[in-house]
Length: 361
Image (cartoon, rainbow, N blue to C red; front, side):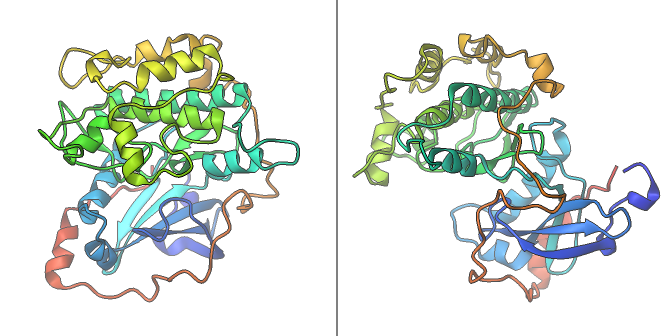
């Protein structure tokens, strides 16, 4: 977007009828497909209802989460992590202008593949698919950890596939700069590390802290799911409490058909004692991500070529045009709409004075 003519700005967009769950639509934001009126380039516009942020009752400060997401988006420059072109606000909403990532969520890709005729829902993606996607995810995590940022909510719903077939991490609301440790309980059941649950005092006893290493536990869970089409701690008949109990003691088993290298990596990452988890570094606030990227599971991956996007992806999303959203889950138009937006009080509005803006570069 080097020319002034192509520089996206708030009044220069046309909104298309498409609304889709590009991120956590229905939680804090809706995401719309928009086009720049001059260049005709297509983008995703993420719209946060300010008042809804204050009314959110999911157990965390939604306004703080919004500001944190904007901050992290400004710090990160990786092809495997969502970029933000521009952000602005008005009296009722905050807006993030984002790239359209048209391949849909990794969870949708896993569902579509395992439900194809002739495939089994008891087995996940082919090994080469799981290897490629896990390499993209591992590189994204390593990039964040190098900048002392923990992702803290890794799951297939938060991973999308771009038009070239590469994975991109999205929804950075739980990310946090962790120089040493954190005690915030966050994440998604089934994917969180044992120490994240213990941050909320799950299991009783002394509240435990967590570090960036929680992301590698969650990474192992995602890798397991890509191969098995099921997470290691969620089995038929188990409720959330059963799942949490299993997580606290790392009670799981890899199926016999898993590649030996994948099983070895998973077993070295789903470890309750963080000092024995692969990637642990004794110096506070650090992690040894090189130990993971150099694991046998990735021996056929050239990470330099991966970063340059010179490797062939196992699946390229077929697209009709730049506005094709066919790879997303169908959106239920009966869900509650946020428009028309309501006004905030002066006190509530003041909370957004701290919101920083990013102009398009």
